[in-house]
Image 1 (tube, rainbow, N blue to C red):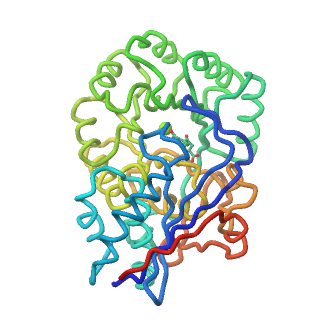
Image 2 (cartoon, protein in one colour):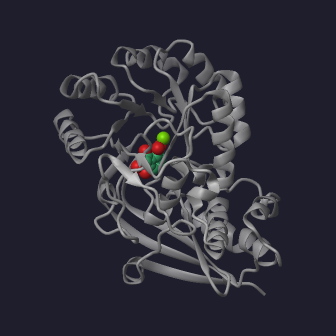
Image 3 (spheres, rainbow, N blue to C red):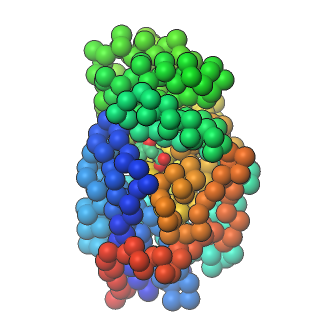
Length: 369
Ligand code: OSB
Ligand code: MG
């Protein structure tokens, strides 16, 4: 496959409600889509970097810059490009995994569409639908939180994840357990807001039968997580720390986590995500598919990945309506608490041209020379 070029498409997507985490509040998502053009076909990738470097060091303007200046030129120079060659071609550029994931996914999608193969089949999916969980932001009050959770449960979500931070942890968990009972699948996500000195406070979550606590400590503190794990009954799951299959292997070997959140964007793409899946599967470590408030383009690919066998826990793969009044693809909808895995070639969905145009704030064409 030889590419004619990439197009960088920027969108401004208002969220249906502000989403508050320990690192900030988001009301609009500044989306970067990458469209790979082969001349007789296209492929799409969505960059998951946020507008500011708060969840991780990457942010959307730097992702666009590194794609434009360093990633796209390396791929556009290749005469025989296929998805497996993207990672090695981009390896000289350090880091920037979210940017790399977006371009690799665009190439992978174009390549699969050219062959008529769905992404799910290519990755080794074993299911045609996946259970949906939902990530619930930090609220101003407990009644507001309980209303939000009740609303999601009424829609059929099968698992609730509460965002926590110091000052909003034990009370919201206790309130949700009390109101919705012991059968509710419940977990929490701290986005690295705690310190090792908070071990006793985190142990106060132990009585509430949480499925897991996600990323309590700093991204690079694997030893801290391993020490914390020895003091908690609640299993530790890592998100921010798992930047590659090697990082996942280190975390498992150190006892830093018992569960892994796989986000393809964070680890450099779907091929690396599959390697992490395989590694965790071999170690008996359950995984689930995280999310980064993706549009239907990113969601389609995440749902395909989530259909692999070691994804035994419901993911943050929610319906389009959880995020956007108007998605850029036909909306993903819950059916019995599950999302259907797209069955068409590649990611299996296409942006709706009129909707895409309405939400686009800028476009940039990067031509092969
Ligand atoms: O830590 O999982 C996270 C959203 C943005 C950045 C980081 C995270 C999240 C979420 C929401 O928790 C996941 C989703 O529903 O897409
Ligand atoms: Mg997380």
